[in-house]
Image (cartoon, rainbow, N blue to C red):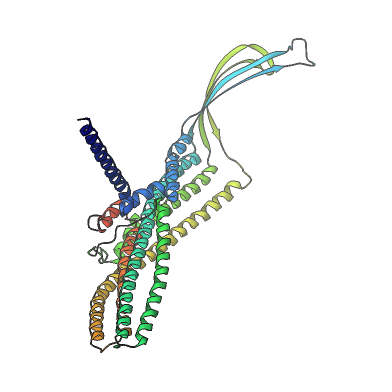
Length: 453
């Protein structure tokens, strides 16, 4: 019986060891899964957390939200408390002047009643807060655009590398076939040399494509902050179509209404208009309510009994002459206001130009995709015919290699057209000021899931 118990114990230990080993493998696989592929939405979430440029706008936005309270303070009461304690020493004075300790305590209040400059300064702070909101929305949209460009540029580089690897395998197969046919005496050494040259050329293309793929991944990694080991590819049936709406004028009108950068420039105009009114207001009188309460034991450097008193009143300040400063400041404000208006017009023209380019690029890309899909079918048919003719002795190896190259060129151009269409669609929404996280969700649905892969 003891022997059986020891044997059962050893079996249980082995089973436990195997179970632990399998559990460790499962945990390792589970931990490795998130790094296997990253979709666009996951990349967007990581970019919002990691990208330092967007992070700087987050803190700028937090700061701008305090501006209305700062501006409101100019219209609210200003209360100050003060106190002093001094020692008076008399070197030469009448006999009734005696050294003493002076004490003084008080509080003062000042409430603006009429002050044009203060009112427009308050408005300026509210406008600056609106400018901060617009800049933050612009930063969010810019992050989506930068991320989409980095993600799909990296994905396009991966797809291009896959195409070149497929071409390398096809050329290698053709080279081996050329060698076999030469050894069989049905082809010349020229066919072998042509295949060798084409294979060496493909190897050079592979090195270039692999380097480009690494560069694009590093650009994406800079945004998301994590090692990019895999990306979800674009589905073949992704809905890449014409812009909706199909009129460029509609997109330009959308940009006028929604683009946060244009809103920011419009707010600059409002800010400078308030600046002009504020400086013109320095010609106007200001009226304040003032009050105070004091306790002291000193009057005209003489010690008195401790007294307490309060005061209330109206204070009027009337500017008479400031050496020409106010007049010059008003002229400066008018010039800066015109500058702000010109900057708005320039920004509108720049956005309209970019918007038009993206709109036309999307439309052209759709036409290119349709034409290249037809060209792909023709190139596949041509390659198949050349291969059959080679076996029949009617074509040479170089004819097949040329057909392979034609097919490869069509596939690369089709790949580029698809990504051009996608990225220009993203740019079109970004330049119109309508892109949002909802678009990231929508485009993310165009990618293959891990299960589909």
